[in-house]
Amino acid sequence: MAIITTKYSLGDLVYLIRWNRRQDWEPCGFCAAEGTITGANRKKKSCPECWGNKGKTTYHEMLWSIASMPDSGHLTIGQYGFTKSRRQEEERYMAEETGVGSGSLYYVSDLWPSLEEAQAECDRRNAELPDA
Ligand SMILES: [Zn+2]
Image (cartoon, rainbow, N blue to C red; front, side, top):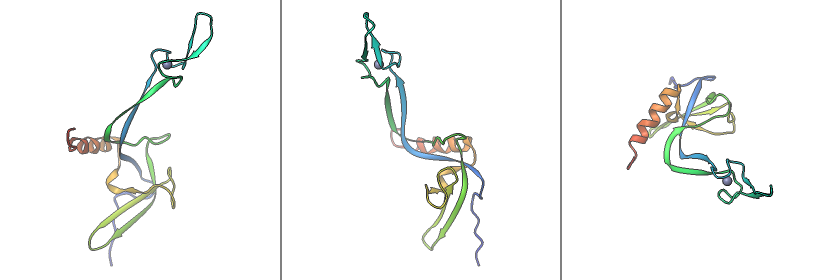
């Protein structure tokens, strides 16, 4: 007989942290993010700086950050699973926002109960990166 204790229960709200490349959107200053330039004769042409894209995406180095979720920003635990063998223990979760039964699977080590704790864990992991 074994009693299994998981960190989170159904309905718990959690924040996911993710290893990814942070992106920033930089609006084009030449066309004021219009994508077009109006000439003296009032003809519009595609902006030569952003090629009509209205700006550009800047990619940064890989870092841990809090994953942005639609609406609320958090995930709601909808299913959990626990696997234990002699070699390892694994606690995984699925969230209502991203699909229960089939959807994204999250490891307990990447889920945190508050934004503050999620950010603290990101900072801790990022500080351990080489050349950070
Ligand atoms: Zn432009």
